[in-house]
Length: 459
Ligand code: TYD
Ligand code: MG
Image (cartoon, rainbow, N blue to C red; front, side, top):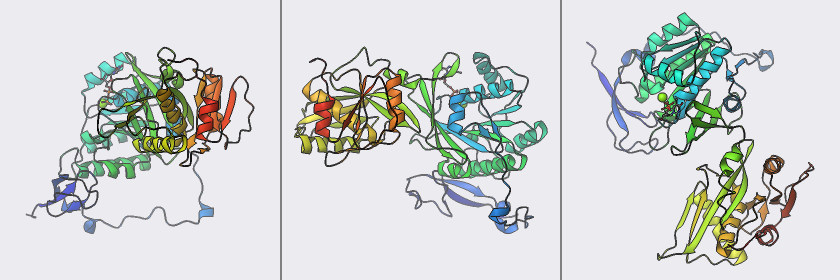
């Protein structure tokens, strides 16, 4: 009998070694090695030479297939996918447990079935009746929707063969296993093998497959990087557990734009699309206006979003003042503080500074700089910022205001939501004519404060 060989595999990056290691030399994570059985039958030396169906071709002679896309009927989801699910593609949806991955995919299944498509929903984590219960809640019913509680990949593949569905959903990749290798479900080897095998099914049978992947505590997709490389599209499902809205974000897409987002709200009947997200993020703004709050127009993908920034500045009781940033990059805030001290002489060396983005959304682009700076300045001066003014602009180290992208879309969004003024960088060229909104162009941070800040009342 052949000797059973074992190997140690890093569960974070998939690095393999013959003996146990405390720290992975590849990705640097500690204690991530797990022993797995090395299956000699899958080693490459025994593989037969495969027939070469696609020999090298001249670029000019290659015929293009027209991409066929399945519309999900959910426009926010379609947008993130780049216009629908491409036939024969493998899509990974990753997110924290309980964020709503199963919910959105069951809803998507329902919508596709309404259009006469056949969907196979492989439920590897929940029983058929649990899925049925959720389907009732979401009013999903169709004879084209097949629920299949199964964890064995070979059986799943056989049923894909038999049913010939238009879309297969695998909920989740961590819960299924292939009998060709011996390690347990959820290990890197299993995930890699299953994903590979599903990719082949997608390409060879031209069926679209969506797999669900859980995210680890650190925010990585469990069994992570290996998966991201293999699939065609990676979509991240994020949101604040304590808030009802959810964001779908594409982080890799072989068939479309990345960094597109779709916004949803989780309610009693599942997820509904949020057509006007800015309104959602501004809901409380008008009622709770305080010194130190401003509205910026950020851009998520190609889409403008109005969000409220709040700053709180106060004398510190500690030897070293605290700088806390939520939803914006702390490094960015420190840089803005340095510019404010140096260029306009704001003395913050004994002040604690807190900056917060309302609604739990992440604003990481530099176009938010000016809004953050003005929030800090109005808080220090204890004035309320003009309710009707929105702000965009990046701040350079010498205090200059730098141009931002998608400026016209941002102005449009502010105007659509009833803002009367918008402060923008002078460096931005605007071709379009805007009516009903005053455009204030500023070159430097001080000018932005003197011209831009119209204190409505002292607080
Ligand atoms: P689920 O789709 O099971 O999450 P995941 O598959 O990502 O783990 O959604 C779980 C949460 O969503 C659960 O806490 C209940 C909530 N939920 C609603 O609020 N409304 C609904 O209509 C549904 C189906 C779920
Ligand atoms: Mg689930």
